[in-house]
Length: 255
Image (cartoon, rainbow, N blue to C red; front, top):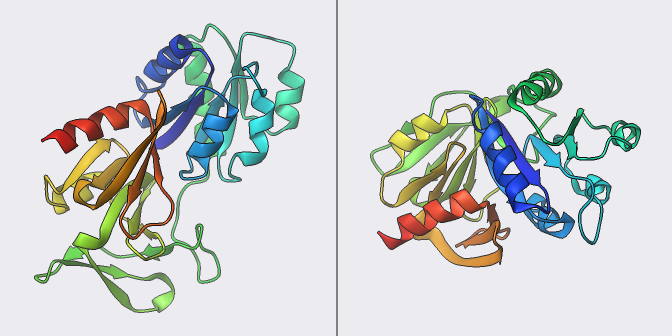
């Protein structure tokens, strides 16, 4: 699964690109932003595999977002102007796509991304993904309502109460588990595994790459038409949601 953030000041352009992207298997648009500031807020809470970034936007240019893009994320510039390609590749862009974007051209970009993005693998003892631990074994549910996580580096096992899980997010071949008052754990399980394991309606799937515990939500803060910040009990940093995930969350909370 490749997760994507789309940044463009034109709502129609966002909708068209997001629709095209999600027509490809294994692509999940986890957020959208209308300007650089909006995108910075999103990137402060989540790390997409790729940022599809317009250049000419009100206030600040797309290039101004580059320093805020995580080192593990890739950038694809999507613009109506041909003259900035050299600048784009100088800042490390994977591709430079001209508007209007068609599916055949986007297929080339997806193929390039698959070659650029590293394949997720278990971390070595001295290598961690953002401080996360890696579970190299299966996740089992215990009779006491906990999940057993076998930690990497032969450091034993950890029992995590299911009730403490705030959200589970897909990270390519793995899933990242964020629990209350704990660092995130990187686990070798699929989203489908977690969906069957975590009880509904306490937990709900907001997209192909995100499951949240609805009961653990402390507050929601609307940032823009395309972004909502969700705060959870016992978790310091809020979780940014795109418009589609926000709509799904509203449906779950109204049930």
